Amino acid sequence: MTIHAITVLGHDRPGIIADTTARLAGLGLNLEDSTMTRLRGHFAMTLLCAGEATTEAIQADLEPIASDGSLTVTVYELPEEQAPAAAGQLFVLSVHGGDRPGIVSTVTAEIAAVGGNITDLTTRLSGDLYVVVAELELPADADVAVLEASVKRVTQELGVDATLRPIEADDL
Amino acid sequence: MSINERVLSWTEAELGVEGRVLDVVRAPAHVLSVPGKDVDPAAPETVQLAADLIATMRVSPGCVGLAADQVGVSARIFCVDVSTHVKTRTHHGTYVLCNAEVVEASRNEKAREGCMSVPDLTGDVKRASRLKVRGQLPVTGETVEIVTDAFEARCLQHEIDHTNGLLFIDRVAGAHALHQRQTYL
Image 1 (cartoon, rainbow over the protein chains, first blue to last red):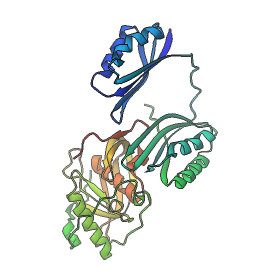
Image 2 (cartoon, each protein chain N blue to C red; image 1 turned 45 degrees about the vertical axis):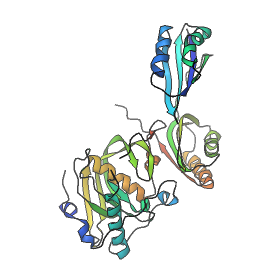
Image 3 (cartoon, chains in turn cyan, blue; image 1 turned 180 degrees about the vertical axis):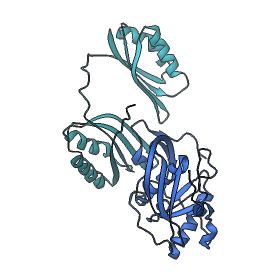
Image 4 (cartoon, rainbow over the protein chains, first blue to last red; image 1 turned 90 degrees about the vertical axis):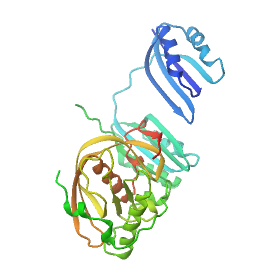
């Protein structure tokens, strides 16, 4: 059993997911974690698939999807990964303001500096408004107040606003 | 749900001035990100602003609430009218609240919301669906408490957030909770 990462990126049209996943199912691959979304008219998906098919077999089977040049497909075999360590403190960071270069790099540097891990991040550009929403895992011993202060400082320097909130998980 | 009859019977006729339609500012305008100042409910400029907010809300398709910072004024006042919205259960008609604050909030529910000041995005936001809010009516300055639920509760929290310099973007539930708007009213 191997894990393959498959990316499909290109001009959006109906049927990309149906076509791609049908071909993967035909190879006996099990679709595990995935993300599929539309980014400014481009469709982008990253799939992790488990199965016995080789990289070459997957590439050959998906080749027709990309044959008209509107989509780019990549296939990689992934190494075994250790299960993630126990989660620390979970937060959502929202940043918004006027679009300018460096917002994501500046803010994420502050998170990395305290050993925080970004587990999911979305950006949206809407006119002049740039929005970043990131989900963070902070080490259990991280000083959240210190991180919040440092994020506020750098976002003020950038002229944007930031809000850091704990993620509430309701266990039922 | 106990209706506040005083608020329900309030109409903009009590303002005694004609409202003007103002331009709605859009993020990233700075005024949307700073807490508003408390207002004097009886001050002529507050009363005029109340009328202007209602006039602007009325001409804006789908608008169920508008806060002063959305028309460029950093002040703690907003108007609401969810009476014709399909998701409304309890409502108090059209009204304006000054210096409003949340007193009690419970029964969080997540729903997708938008904002005239962020016209091209929507977000999934968890908010209380049972709410008690305290504020003052314009002109008289009477303190009123509104106990409400469902969509009026969501709208009040959204508007009170505006008076505190917060947008729904500051409260989206996660990285996959922010969306490009698909339909416009």
